[in-house]
Image 1 (tube, rainbow, N blue to C red):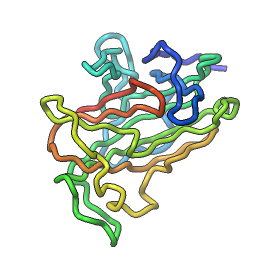
Image 2 (image 1 turned 90 degrees about the vertical axis):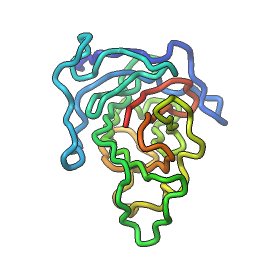
Image 3 (image 1 turned 60 degrees about the vertical axis):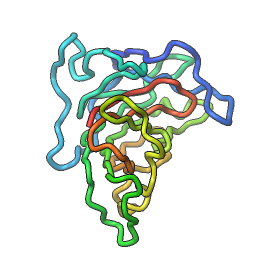
Length: 207
């Protein structure tokens, strides 16, 4: 089995909200997900300052999240064995994303922000107590250019896209998926952060 370089984002055991079970560890791990990026989006960089190669340097934001660029890899591993359970990459961040759902509501906060994500889970995820990962808009936070956290980044984002374009919220083992998550933000520039349930830290991208 191939060994993947890992950078552990949190050293303490994580507890899933409402379930009191262990969450997977946020890491930088794995190979490029097999799903194609959004049209015109950047592909993973072959090198980055700090020796991080395609995973980027292990720099953290003031909020403790690993800082990512478009196309750089991230992932999770099991708390029990450090085996890689997922690899993913944000392949595009699009402000004022055009809506395709005929029933779309206007942006509640000012701007729809589209986040295109490629996700690949490994068969080892099946061995976890809860053998799935959740990628929903409720796992994302948004900040303005001054670092102030934005209220209600979900807003009306749920209504923007047709369901065929939206990333599945629950992803099981051995799957490769691609799609959009839509936030509804007040700030035209800033940062977004993704933290899985039960984790206090995760990954962060500027937009």
